[in-house]
Length: 116
Image (cartoon, rainbow, N blue to C red; front, top):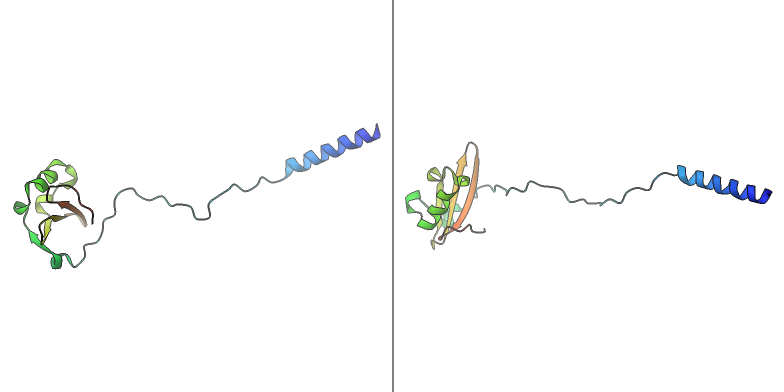
């Protein structure tokens, strides 16, 4: 009977010790991925716009680009924007300035958004 009591006492003490032990640290990443704003970045205008592109007026835009700009409120103010086209005439760059920020949009001659 003494053996059974000492085994039960030992189990009770062991259970109490394990119950009081601290919880392990949760697994975490050492370099977590930082959340960023999903909106595209506004790139600063580079000084080489005039080297590779020529400045044009809104009236000189091809109909496809014009239709794209008129179809969305995202491009409000495009009529007063600074507009460039590359020398081959297949890329159009529109710099729309609102307050103190300038957003740059690029389109091909059909009015589809173009990558840089």
